Structure formats: structure tokens, C-alpha cells
Length: 290
Image (cartoon, rainbow, N blue to C red; front, top):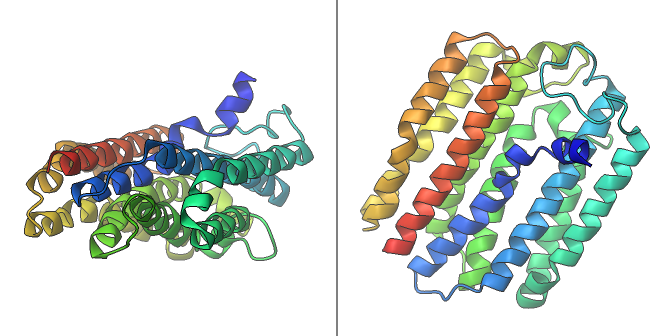
């Protein structure tokens, strides 16, 4: 059981929590009353979708030969002989079913719009590495993360609580999504050699290590620059609190530029996940204090 817990990649699951938390805090700052039950429903559904996506990713990558003995990242369930590809796909299916069940309260509240978002999110989670045209193998994985873990999740979290979507939710979604995109960008830079060997055409493979490093740098720094928007909106706390983790972003950029892809990137991935989580918490607190 403990091995299976590791295989769902618990360190990265905060990617599903942060956008809904931050979106709800933004809604509260704009006068909405937070419905904790709806917030928990949204977060739980998002967590199960991400877990399902991670499991599909493991099975699909193994079947395509991307997860072999030369893999630099943490070893997965099928690699270690803990489960078969069929069992991992079955676990992913069960996770998606749980996501649908968990989303019943927000679907009842939001109607067909939320139902559509949940269904599309599940389809996209599968299409990330599975199907005839897997997104990650076509270099679209980074954009997928920005869209679904940034714009869609944050706007949905904001809309569920406030009943509207506006420019502020888009800016917040961009900040959250870019920091989440750092996770996949670091992952792709770490695995560049193995991905190229099996024809996984990530952005790192398509454009090289230097491009990948610039992508990570931009995705780390731009969310802090976008904090100027909140200052112009009069949200002083939301504009300044996230800068408390800017030094961590500097450290991460330096490490990525100074070290070649290796197992050390697994530590960078953990640091990026912690940065994403802390940034989301700080900006959420900033909104709450307005």
C-alpha cells in the first residue's frame, strides 16, 4: 500500500489544491461568502483527476518504453514489478470514477458548465500520455498544465464561490499555472535524453536544454512580476506576500542552469512543488487579509 501511495506522486498533488484555494480566497476578497463544502468537493475531484492522470502517465510511458532502467526520475509501479500495466490503468479508471463522484456537489451547484469542465479535464488527463496523439509526446504537456492547473482550475474555483469569471481570475490563474508548469518543465529537462530516445517530443527535446532552462526561468519569475497587477488593483498584501518565496525561485533557477540533467533534478522538482504551494498559500492569505 505504501508503494502505491508513492506511485501517485504525493509531492506534486498540491498542484490540484493550490488553484482552488487561491481562487476561493480571491472570491472572498471580492465579497463572496466561501462555501467550504463546495471548495472541498472541487479539490477532492481535482486530486482524483490528477492521481488518475499520474497513473495513466506511468502505464503509458512504460508501454511506450519511456520508463526503462535508464530513467533518472523516481521508479514507478510497473518498473518495480509491483503492478502490471493493466492494474495501473484499472487504478486510474477507479480514480476517475471517484473524481466524478466527488464532483457531484459542485455539478449540482454549477450545472452543465462544471460537468463539462470535469469531463473535459478527465479526457485531457488521459490524453496527456495515452491515446493516438498524446499531448506530452507532441510537446503540448506544458501548455496542458498551464491551461488546466492554471486558468481552468483557478477560474473554476473562483466561479464556484462567486458566480463569475473576470480578468483577476485569469491573472491569478496565470501565476498559479506558470509555477505549476515549472514542475513539468523540470521533469522534461531531467528526462531529455530518455525522452528523445523513445520519440517523446517534449519542448525540451524539440528545442534543447537551453530553451528548457529559459522556459523554467520565465515560468518562475513571471508570476512575481505579475504581482504588479494586484498592486494596481489596490491589493497590497496579495501583491507583496508571495515575494516571501522569491529567493527560492532564484535558487531553483541557479541550480537548473548550473547542473546538467541528473537525479539531482528530483530534488529540484520537490523544491518547485514547495514553491508553488507556498506561493499559493501566501497570495491566498494576502487576499483574505484585504
